[in-house]
Image 1 (tube, rainbow, N blue to C red):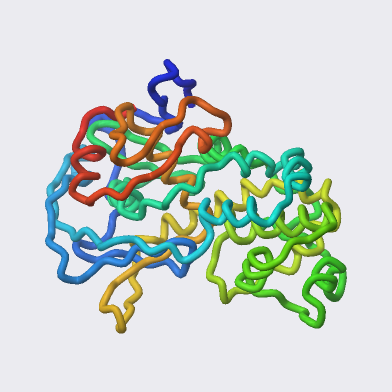
Image 2 (cartoon, one colour):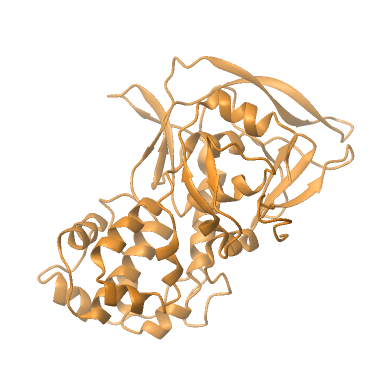
Length: 351
């Protein structure tokens, strides 16, 4: 990571290595004309089957170990649809909390989320970058080739962009970041605001925050913390249950605040970015093929913006260097897929 060279232009958050012919790189993109699904949620990219195909260079490993760009044909897959999660949900948090509660919430480890702009997720941009993925031996990173530059997306990039704790899991958790032991039954917070329910769906929590206000400042902050983690950082569909361990962990604000939620969000996001182009799901009613992304793919989108020196204002508005980096970006504008390729992936102004 490098700091911004000047207030007027963003510097890359991407790690990068210049490509050489001897590097062991192989394209791991999708089969021509077939997008991959993930069983994820958060964001859906739904391509229409009758889209016009366009040519685009991708990296191919030759028998002698060299790397060449081979032009293949693939389809651009329609316009993305936001299912749930994402920074747009920050607006609900701001609506739910009172002024006093917002001031108190700012002192938590998630306080900077109130400074986030409700960016519109750009599925086309993410899809175009995923088509640039190249083989990389480290399973905890992703590598992409744009022109002669390799761009690496890692947990350190995720931490710098989101401002979240990405340290190792504490000893009381298993390797998936879930506490090994939990109290029996419902938590007191869940019983107080959702009486009679042993399990709460994500949609139920969303509706509660949308339709109510909580006078108890501590309770309000705890509900918002659960919402941010489950609805934004670990996004999935509304018909999925809020993980029970979140209700118990939030009983201790110190424990909840010091937990490395950034690590958990990063690996969930990475898992489904890697799966995205390897399969497909079909919506027979709308005649579309689509894939979905769990986790917090908006952080990956911001990372893409920071990979390019010159950013057209028709795509994104840069607000100046801020920490975390996600606060540096204002509104993502809708852009045609051909325009995205011309302005990002065919330009040579890569960091």
